[in-house]
Length: 124
Ligand code: SF4
Picture (tube, rainbow, N blue to C red):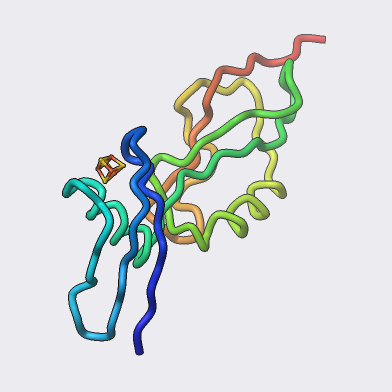
């Protein structure tokens, strides 16, 4: 089985457009990129695309109702939608400090969701 993936390199502003051909059991063939960083990026994007997850979660007792958060590392692109759905169902209690883990090991991955900012407790 073989597959070909057109990938635009986003590693630098040049934006090379190339192609990664994958055949079972073979090293991917790459063409169209002018440096090794682009080749590595394109192979990763074609074989195991990763993304950072950014979203908000609800806050209980805070001065703001929503807390922005980000994943501690890039995670499989296929996991992003279900991760966001899962996080839409949680509530974290104020006060919250930037960098605090709000959801550990999301989807069983070695990736935590961490707060992007402080949120103080509501006093009234
Ligand atoms: S292949 Fe190299 S030069 Fe081209 S966009 Fe990617 S990083 Fe930039």
